[in-house]
Length: 211
Image (cartoon, rainbow, N blue to C red; front, side, top):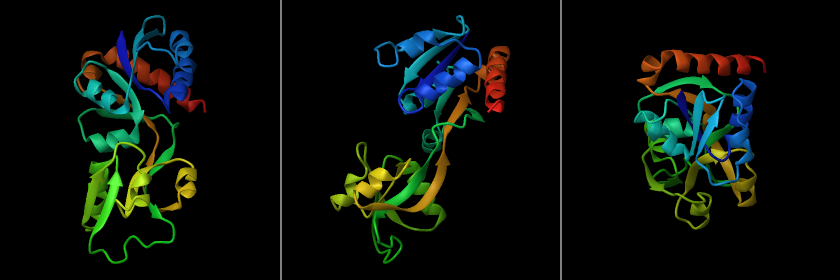
């Protein structure tokens, strides 16, 4: 048996569809998508699925309590931790972007710029690569509020349709990175459970290749 950590929320339904298509029957999980359970059996007991927040998926994989994980590329980029990223699953597509008040030139008068974000590591690396010195403010809730409250000049955040930005008078300045769901594997599990992890990866790959 292998244990899979699945990010709950935005990519959960697409992940269940993928697993079902790969032959891992997930009726128990699908029936409880709005329930309280956190552990599920799938694929006739071949895999155990754990629902977790994105950052926790990374932690569980890194510490070896889960063998496989499905998580967004944004969380992977922010974590900078040790595991194998083996597949782009192709769903949950969006982008990480620099955004701010519409009509403003972020790079004009760079004496002191403040950027609010849930992704301080990504943001720091992005501006370091461009030799731009910015102050980063970590925000956990609605990042779009920061420029509206004059806390920051811009934000770095996940953007899907851009409708929330437009509704609040903001616009995308630059795309930082494309984002989609990825399959990751614990470093030890890919060796100690080679047969099981190889079988899982192969079945998922075959299902992706059908599309």
